[in-house]
Length: 191
Image (tube, rainbow, N blue to C red; front, side, top):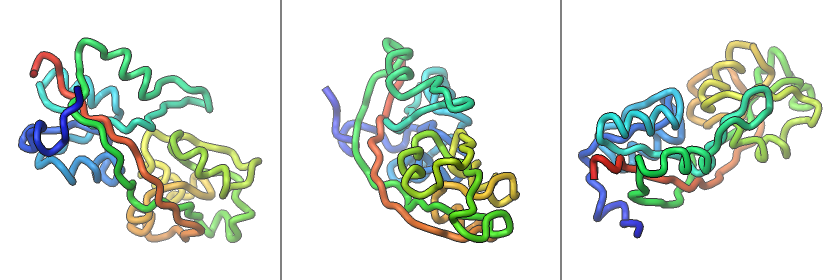
């Protein structure tokens, strides 16, 4: 049985989640927990939670791809760690405002976009905004895609608006305000 987040979960226990700084995962974790540990992947966050007896916050939209091929997902992670972790809470929450942003030095007009950096979970959002022929470069977290676009490695990115603005040299083309379902896990050995 799932417990309500604010009555059965200790906000003083650390939570591990996907980094780097600027991810929706970090943003959501900081809404509920005092101590947030940022790691390079959701599986690394779950491993950390199991090893340290703390929580792991995982987005239900978690997908991991390489060269456009799906290699891992939330359901894979959920089943793989069965017996090691258990759900402590599940909830829906708005993500940070997302946007399509362009490096105008590479793509002065959005129709000129020939390459885009994005997290696998944002593919559906990008489909409506980026030309079909544009090459997709998948990253483990949206801030990494923003860095690629800001560095001129790709023409555009789908990123969080605040992170795009911090980059300073990207122009926002369109904004989006989706929601995400969050799964808070705890180590079975820590229960």
